[in-house]
Each structure stands twice: as C-alpha cells, then as structure tokens.
Amino acid sequence: LARPEVRAHFPADPGTRWYPPPAPLALGLAVDLFGAVAQLQGRGYVHHDVKPANFMLRIATRREELGPDELLAHALRGGARGVLIDLGGARSRAW
Image: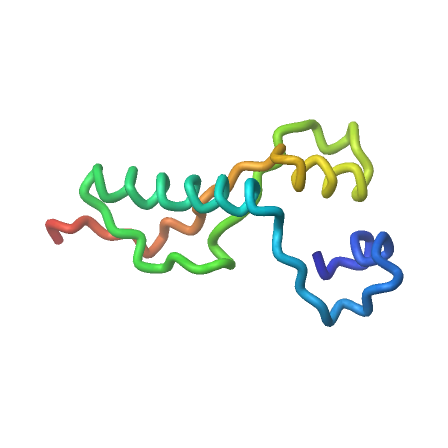
C-alpha cells in the first residue's frame, strides 16, 4: 500500500496510519495462511519462514480490467486469497 500509485488514492493519509482490513477479509486470509501451513505439514514439510513478507494476496480478477482504487476495493470486498510464498527454506520433517 506504500506504492505511489496507491497512495495517490488516499490524499488525506500521509502514510503513517495503519488501517486493519475488515474482519471477514482478515479471517479469510488467516484461514488461507493456516491452510497453506497445514498442507505443507500434511506432506511432511515445515516452511521455516512464515512472516508477512512471505504472504501475498492473489486478487481474483484480471488486473487490466480494474484501476488501482477498484482493485483495492475488490480485494477489500473479499475478492482476494492469501498465498504463502518463498518455499526455499522449507525442509522435510524427516531431515
């Protein structure tokens, strides 16, 4: 959200405030994160680097169809899924 093209849509906010996502979106993203960790665990792996920087949003729409403000609004309405990335540090539990 700190990118200039996104910040332009929030002129009253100097970028020093943090706004939590709506509860339904936050809960959905938490379920996605825990589901990803459970999938790895179920296959015998441990991620070893779960942190916010390794958790991305996948927005279920074609990016070309929406501008930055519509894209953000679509994500906040529940059009986003969480994806756990950076599996380079994942190791087998048997290792």
